[in-house]
Image (cartoon, rainbow, N blue to C red; front, side, top):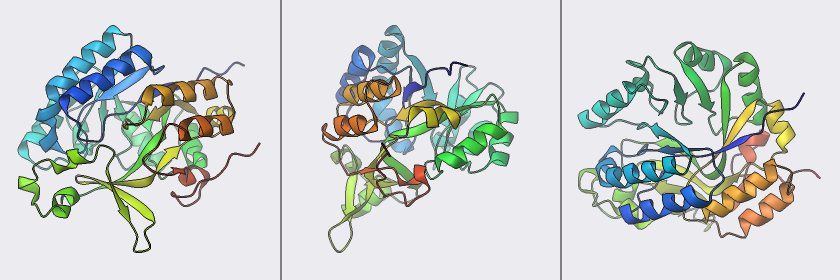
Length: 301
């Protein structure tokens, strides 16, 4: 039996980029990146959403014209009436959308994707979402590949997407770390998160990179690289790998993953090609192997 090819998707932009940068980034994705689906939308901070709205709308048109599927993603931590209205409006959209906060399901009657910022850590939670219309789940980043496989086996027909590249999204807060770092309050943040296009690195007292800050979001310092054998991914029910946008050459990252999934390069080749692109942090993949998330487990030859 021939397994279907594992697809590639580009997740929503987590960082606060300028509109021109957003437009240029997605134009290149449209023209050069071998990804099947692109998620668009502000998922981290509702204050940033109006600033990028026109750029993302332009990006959606360009991506659609290039044959990419566009799926809009909802906010993960609504903090205002406007945020809640935005989530409610997205829930009423008949097209496929990505839900990142459970309130997005309250008025949802059409199929949806469960994003990695929802807390779905076991088969029972995943099955509950399936009963509510979930057709694809981007698994929580803390799950091992074994745990992901257990969810896939318990929910036949549910497509599984795996966070495969990028700083790992770990947590969200009602406080803005970026603003606090610059002596500002959240309500008058001046959008200083835009000064750090891949997040602001945090180090331990010993000077070792530990975490990264992105406004109200905490991410890993290291960059996730799912260099797991494609056969093992397929056996775990993985239908697609998700790449998270960074200032790194994302078209080249996508090409490297496509070559890996198609058998053109092995795990070592994928790691070498991606690492050579200049990443904001060291390569990690511990969670996938049931280890500490910041660990880097080399694939066995």
